[in-house]
Length: 130
Image (tube, rainbow, N blue to C red; front, side, top):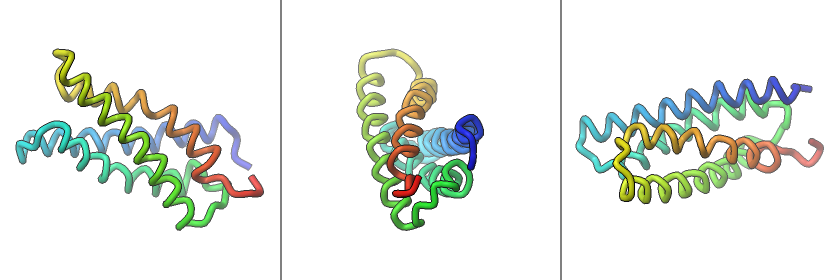
């Protein structure tokens, strides 16, 4: 059985890769395609979901043995909920602060990570036997 500290380490590594993917894709969409930051954030999240789910399923929560289809569906709900919070906060903070969009997005991505870990561990990837 994988220890909690090892699991947290994998979560940070996979989450870091997914957050980096999210951030880079979103910024590239703004710079290259002149998408508004909120629209670019959606594209970044979709790209990051693929990185996040595959890494968490194969590494972070591999011992929890939830079926691929069930884990993917549940993790999509967790990720989508986190993204909705992300998008709402991002929209509001873009409106009420002068913080550059790229720094603001980075801060929000970090803030959502803890919620994602908890929901993933206790529900998305958990099998009945875990």
